[in-house]
Image 1 (cartoon, one colour):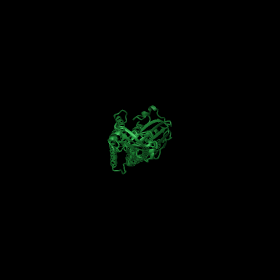
Image 2 (cartoon, rainbow, N blue to C red; image 1 turned 90 degrees about the vertical axis):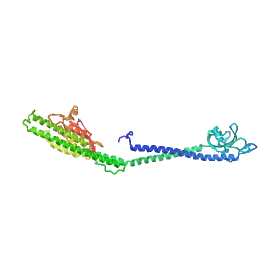
Image 3 (cartoon, helix red, strand yellow; image 1 turned 45 degrees about the vertical axis):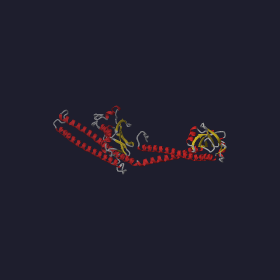
Image 4 (tube, helix red, strand yellow; image 1 turned 60 degrees about the vertical axis):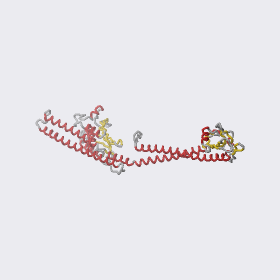
Length: 470
């Protein structure tokens, strides 16, 4: 299985990545928002408790003979040293400083140090309870409430401050954040999985369209026959119209090729016939003999180029498929019969093998010409033994390997054997077009022909051709 190329554009990957990025942003923002809301709600409840304590300090304080007296509070936590709950009552001196008059036992030998900017806020809003964060004994984080007010009989403004350790709030908020993050992570994973399933299911018609197009290309179908959503239906209609147009163009090319073959072959046949009937028609060097010989060459060239043009036209079609096994069987029987008297009465023996389901993506006539030329060439040169093996190599390719036990061919002449008109032996009948026709016809189908040394001692010819799925 080939590796997925991550650089290649993919609709599925693009949609999933976009949905993942969007879900990630939304979930992160939602998690941060929920955690902040939880923290704010906890702090508001905390502030309400501190506000009640501040109000109790204000309401219970009194002035006796000019001396400020703190109320009696029953809050046990405020009596234990460094318990986390503290309060102070301070007077606002004319120079702007705060002088502690009373404080809770929990402060022991410490004070609540209110920052100057908080004091300025209190001055700006007398009678209003303000909330802020500060550092307390043992450098613990505190949440504080402060109120600046005036008491009857007392000259200076009085500041009432109540504070409590906010570590439990921070711990609860952190715990809530972790739980929320885990829940949102699970939710995000579920959403991403749902997006993947949704995209895969939503794009199934597109995948089905791709499979149908591949079936048409491999010759398993002639047109797209599936029912598609309204977004893809116009594309399917246009593809079917394109297939029909291509088929029409190919048929038109075949007609033109046939007409051209008929138009050229008939005058050439007339020329050859008339030249052979002229006096001296068989005399070498005579005009009639030259005309006859050149006309025969022209007819061979016309056949060659028309064959190539037909192959190029047929290779553009996508609906042709030909089983390979019957073709090899027919060729083997025919060649064994033709060359039955070879080599002093001993005929040619052709051992061929081919899977039953192997199919050539092309026309039967072209496969007959490809395999027939190769096997006939082997029959001409072999001593009596030929082996032909057809086998699939990939999902869309197959090879035909033909070996013979003849004299073989030197490697330096392999390339010459594929050139048009090249004959390896002038004493052997033929035009020298056999392997060149195979090479050009194979290349017209996107294939190739390679020569090599045969294990039987002669020449090996390997055809690489397109395969059609069964």
